Length: 154
Image 1 (cartoon, one colour):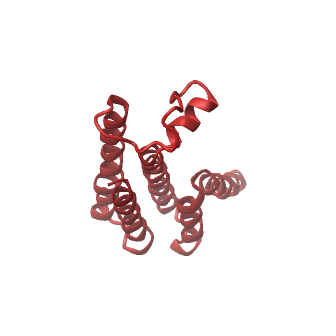
Image 2 (cartoon, rainbow, N blue to C red):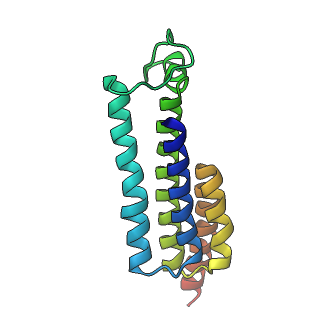
């Protein structure tokens, strides 16, 4: 079960990323990525987390004696030492990285950045979320400073 959920979540996120990067970014594509992509991933995360926490489903723990909690590193390790914990954690990453990617794409479009410049930033965000966000923040800040200097001159 966990292998299938992992594969489905990955494929779904990749479809959404492909739409975000490759398709014209009109209202329909943005809404589809937001609601059908991010929304469904968040729903899957929430439901699966609740099922795991309540013990309704078995997470297939690697070490059944490991204690799970969010308050210690050992507790967090215990959460991820199960197939269920890994899948839920991975869906968490997929949803938040896609959310960040959508924000970057919308922000870049509003600021007039070319899709050619956006593509590598979005790819980096897909592969390593916070690193992509950091690169985008640096790029947009540089443009903002350049635009501010141009306004002062005129």
